[in-house]
Length: 329
Ligand code: GLU
Image (cartoon, rainbow, N blue to C red; front, side, top):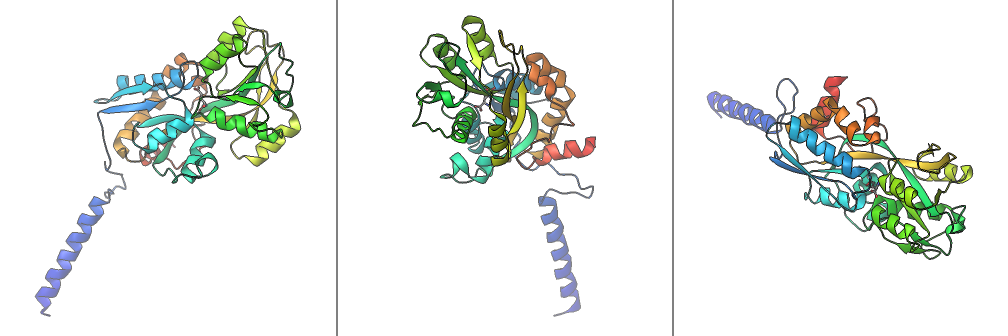
């Protein structure tokens, strides 16, 4: 081959390689260029209207509408965590409020997601606040411990909720399964109405405290919150990586004179992997620059912070979010 042809071929190779590198989205400054989708409307999956996802997801939508130019956000009520990871993975919503244990199971394709493909489209944006597994019982139903739920009618959470998964695990830790109770798949609002009217004896509610459904119920009906014994808490915390021990302080609900020993997971904001890095960067920035808007929507919004945003993070971060966190370090 002639020397000049070799040089020409070399030059073409260098040119093609440079074009390939630009296509990969990295420029000389190491900044990630806009690569993925940048829709002008985004949807946010929350939970039932009497939970905490709903008001905080609504506040997140308002932050996007108020501070991110050219993007309109809508939040929608859903059956919560399990439904939300499905909606997000299928691209039917762009952001979702989810429990950190459920997003982990979904991403790995384990536990309740064992029969499905791992949901690889899920990315983390931030962990937000603790969600306590609250077990509320009719004060007149003779239920003092979790074991006493045997033979009772129990609201175990909406179909597609993280609550329902937690109910199953907490019962199992006490040697009980759905064969030992009569499970009712109810939203927080339905559980609260049915408990008040005597149609169910107890309800599981995994949510930030105070949860409106329980606050409302406790003003209309005499209820008790069940404590989990210390040895069972130790067992649960060591069996499942995302449970942590917490206390529901006395006075969280009407007539609750004593603190209650419980376990909690973390609520987190998740985002679809295909959204562009620039869009997710702008939205992450808007969120952390306007945290007081979350606090005005619900007390637990006040727990959200940049410092705590990776505590219990169970998913790989979206690169747009990672860029914002790197800049803030
Ligand atoms: N963590 C609950 C669930 O996924 C929903 C909590 C809420 O709506 O605030 O089942």
